[in-house]
Image (cartoon, rainbow, N blue to C red; front, top):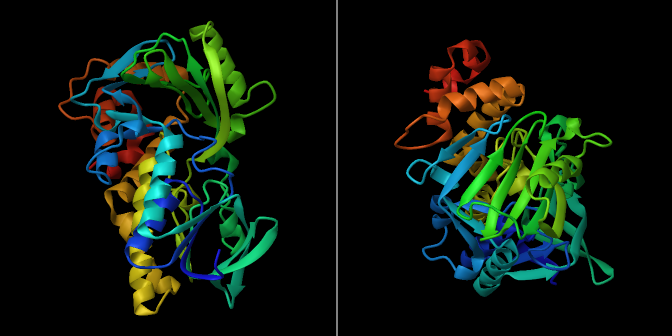
Length: 399
């Protein structure tokens, strides 16, 4: 580990890997540090991504990345009624469930092949700040603390985003907007092997949803996210998940247990500071409805590195110069979707099970040529006139 680089990336997930790879391809010296002892594990993710989204980065997918090809999705109402999204209308729900352990490692290997360096079990324990400008980080590695300076630091350290706090940036997520999650990798269970299933309802999963993401004919990620302020003794995410599993998969075998958190709040007010950029979950770019963040991390990581390379080349890594990254992602399709989906989330988490049953029953007979959150919301409003008042705040996002 050298004492100085052009770009220092904190975090070796998809966002950090794409940032490191892109910066290295631009001819910059790059160091990626990852606090865990290995890349890709433990997997704190349901591992799903839409086909169109992942194809934005790769012309060809390594078969080892893919656990299952997904051809549709199913939404299950509190009363048990199902609404299927077929392949023609399922949008980003048509895609893949990944093997993140393999996928994440391959992304880091690609960064290494491009010229980046990567160090695991290397934890950022403080920031190097000079006159309010981020100049690098103090990295604990191999029993010693190393000062690593960089022209730009890219924080890709996930929902915890400790590095942001070291730099004086408030990265706090309100408890009500932090999904507390638990997931089992289960075997020997009866599932629809090409369908991602989503269960909703305040009684079963308050403030969130339950998912079943297939990873084979009789294997799946079975997980839950609930609002952090709904978590209490006896009513934690794992308690709700155990109740669901006991009812639906009583003979299934649990082979892995994963717990964690996902932010469903708005993005940071600014995802850049002097010498510093935030990407992926560290920037609060996970989808407020689904909690999904693989694509958003990769998109923002790549974009951040491109802007950083331009600013370094121009000799200006001030907040004003780096702001091109912030304004670009906010104006992108991803940025607009985050803004819209946050407003949708704010309304739907307040609905009771009776309202959810009514809504999903109304859309279960829909035939849409193309599915998207936007078209679905328009149809829900059209078919649920009694909910006009509750859904009124969404109107400007549905034009």
